[in-house]
Amino acid sequence: MNVKEIYEMFIDLGMKNDPRGWDKVQEILERAKKDYEKLSDKEKEKFDLEKLRNPYTDTRILNGDPNKEVKRVLVGIDIDTSEILLAKELGRNGKEIDLVISHHPAGYAYANFYDVMHLQEDLLAKLGVPINYAEGVLYPRILEVERKVMPANHNKSVDAARLLNIPFMCCHTPADNCVATYLQKLFDTKAPYNLQEILELLEDIPEYKEATKRNNPPKILVGNPKNRAGKIFVDMTGGTEGPVEAISKLAEIGVGTIVGMHMSEEHRKEAEKHHINVVIAGHMASDSLGMNILLDNLEKSGIEILNCSGFIRISRLKG
Picture 1 (cartoon, rainbow, N blue to C red):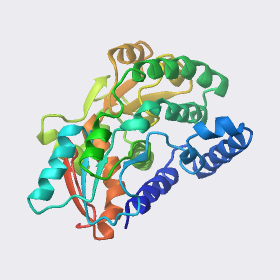
Picture 2: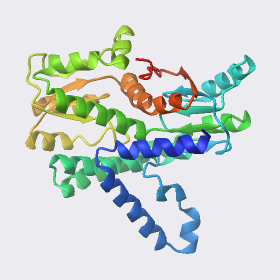
Picture 3: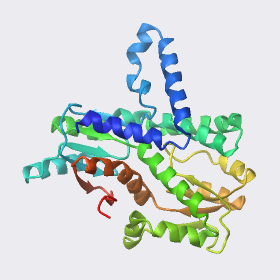
C-alpha cells in the first residue's frame, strides 16, 4: 500500500463506523459538493478540496509523497518534533520509517479540527435531542474551541517532518468513530446491569487491560459500582468535549450512563447534578483501541507497525 491508499482506507473505515450512519455521511459529502459549486472562483481557490471526499477535517496527509510505498509505519497518539526525530533515528538504526501516523491532528488538520464537532449535533439528534437544541448549544462551544485553537503553533511537527523528509499523516475522527461504534455495539449486545459490569466489560478489552497495568484503569467518575447502568451512551467521537448544556438533555431523553474517554470537572458536576452515571474508559487506551481497529488492516497488508507516544498496539490478527 502507498500513503494515499492508507489515507483513503482510513477515511472509508471511519465512514463505515460513523455513529451517524453511512447514508448521513454521504448526505454531508453531497452537501459539501453543492456548497462548493456555489462558490465564486476566488472562494474556490481557498476551499479545501479534501472536504469533497473526506468528511473529517482532522484527518489529512500532512507531508510527503502520497504515492510512496509503505512497509513500516511509526504510530503515536501525539506526534511532535521529538517523534519525527525518533523516526529519523530509527532509520539510521536499520528500521526505516516510511510513514509516521499521529492520532491527534497536526498542521492544517489541527487548525480547523473543531469543524468535526458538528458530528455531535447529529449524534445528539439520533439519540432524541431536538436538532435545533443540539445545534444551538454546539454553536457557541464550537466557536470556543476555534478560539482556543487559533493561536496554536499548528505546523510545528509538520515543519520537522518536511525538513527531515518524513512522510506524515494524522487520523483522528475515523479512529474515534471506530472505538465509539465498537463499544456502543458491545454494551448494546451485552446489556450490562450496573456500572461494575461496565467496568468488567472494559477491563476484558486488551487495550484497557494494558492501561490498567499502567495504573490508568477505567474508572467510575459519577455513581457507584452497584448503580444500574440504564441506557448507555458511548461519547467518544466528534472532535473534543461537547457543550455542558447537552448533559441535561441527555438526562431528559433517558440516558442513564455516559461512557467516555475523559470528562472535565464542569461536565462531571453537571452529570452528577442530573444523576447521570459516568464511566471514564481512559483516553490513551480508547484512542489506541480506535487506531488498532484501523491498523489491523495495515498489518493484513504486510505493513510493520511500531508504536510510540502512548499508543498501545494490540493486534487482533494473532489470536
